[in-house]
Image (cartoon, rainbow, N blue to C red; front, top):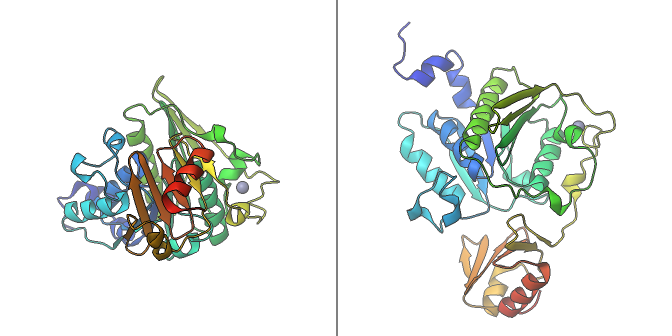
Length: 320
Ligand SMILES: [Zn+2]
């Protein structure tokens, strides 16, 4: 048999075709997600990329974006980028600029064989955990903070993320305020990509892998199903969670759910509202940027409290 000159292909044989034929949804196109997308995109995996945000200057040191891409939506930039670098490894690639939540997750994640969690927030991760368990889709979780990172595969029959986390309600304290050590995202992304390959080969690693670059500590913890885990007992609380206003992890933005979500109506209130593909409304005024998604959620950037966010929203869009 002739050996291919492509070193990745050579390594992945005889599973290369199966890997390319597997569809993967990556949620989050930030530090981890942009790396996962590039690696899997290069080898021709069918991808769906989901992210609600646009490229900002602060992302350039740790995410796969260029200065010239500032202000563009991450999911779309990454889709274009992968199309440019793929060479002969052509595959389906789709992107969605959306704020993933319990209302739209069914529509956004469908016909996918594997889900990769590359988000930076626990709420979406728990939502993905419930969704993946309910639909019996393997989910590869990844988390970063400081010099540490962790990853695990949630298989349809194995322990889930909530088995590890417990049932405590999520508080604001779960935000990652540590910053990120250079290199840790590459390690965790590498492990997530490897877990994807292992899932395709039908040998998922259901253990919790943790890494700390500070002391070069690598650990593998064998996981068990927690007997009273709500998710594993078929109670998918995250898929029914109510909407609430809250300050987001960066402490400079707030999410809320305004009463009027019809973008055309909002544009009548403030003609400066830009409507993007009938799906997202964007309004900028000095240091404030408001993004309104068709899911009904609004993100107000440039504010530090829910009260301030409400005040700015009312000022710019005439009442909630
Ligand atoms: Zn569980």
